Image (cartoon, rainbow, N blue to C red; front, side, top):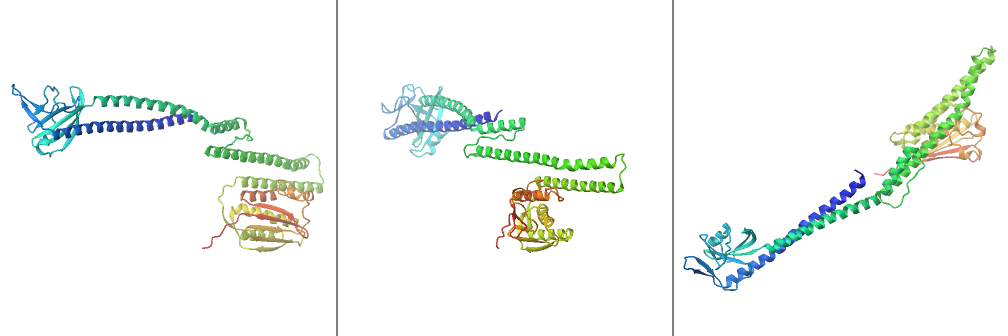
Length: 452
């Protein structure tokens, strides 16, 4: 069963329940009102009886009948007197004998004048309502009135309410289908777009969004998800294309050198040594390049939960490591305590890349200035600096400035720094430093400390 059909059925069921409950309430309210009117009439007749004398008139055949003023009551109103022994007196020529209930007998024996009980019964198939009233010690009066008109009225009302209920259910089902179709239009568009993306693989498709309700928010979230997937897919394709391009040159050179080494031509020892050195160097470049690619892929799939990281301690450890590997440069550091939110391993990798890049471009004996404060790390070298035309691209994957193409490296170190900054909600910028050299600044989200 479709979701639209379920909504229509649910709406019809809700309306049906509401109409049925309302019909039941209306039916019982109307029946109560009609019974109250009949009870008021019976009470009025009882009050009239209290104002006139009742007498027992004997007949020659030994029977007795109830003597009451002519013209008493209304048509179809039956009156009889009940004695304490259960015997009754009816009006002359009155063929209707009301059943004597235990409550009526109790009124003749213990009831005080005016005490009454109301009951319903059937006499010869006629539904009647009976008021039994204590009259005098040993006597009670029963006044009855047929409920034929009330029953007919209630029967017509019952049919009328059933018709209204059925009509309401039918209208609710129809309106439910119409409303569900309009309400589920965004869901239908969402489904069609999802199916189309599945079939075609085209992540550029979007859903038209209008309004601010929950379905519109769902469509907006779906569009955002598609945009994210499209960007991720584009980045993956670009990474594969760039990696293929970057690997092609060292692989070609490596293959050529190996073919020469294993060829039939005898090589002088000096040339063979040079070729072997080139092979080792090319393998090192490929290892560095592949390691960078793996690092980028891991950063994109980072699932570790962020935690508080002491940025100053991470920088201090990175300086100590790089100082051992590059003893020809000196470091000058200002490290203020600074706590950020992030993944320690990736933050350490980004900071190490920044400092190592500065060390690579520093001349022998050069000084690198590192400043940590307020959730940011600033690294400044005194090297040749970055040309204006290269500044916008230094954090792109595999980008190497013209002046750097003769130096070792994969072109991925600074790209990893930017990726770490992006995944941590921060940023990294590069600028020419006053007096020469380059300054790079990595900003991350600080942890707010609430004073106790």
